[in-house]
Length: 160
Image (cartoon, rainbow, N blue to C red; front, side, top):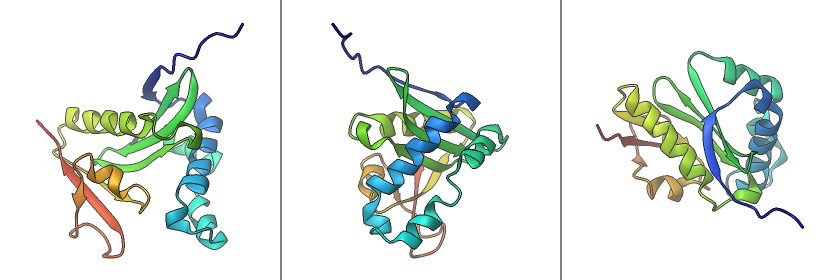
């Protein structure tokens, strides 16, 4: 008899022991879920994945200017997020098999709470086309003053 799945979702700061699983989730999320953005173009996908390596994720976890988070469901890495100390969400990716289970929402809520606790009044990010509606539904608006016009730069004011 197998034990029932509890599907307990936990968001925590990433550790070095998470590098392999978190990198794999990150790369699979981009490859499998962001087709609207890379449209299957190998060159676009290669550029996007170029810095999504084990070595780079290891460096991000160790960086003083970043907080890297993982979401776990039943002790398995289900998502990865990263927030700069300046309040920029740099990563928010979910394992394709865990999509629509609250993983990205939990990561984002944790990053927003940590930004607010650090005294930041605004969180910014650059959304994919795939995730634009996700962020809009969570209070983010396009921010034309931040970034290039062809990017989906978004921001949200945080509650005090």
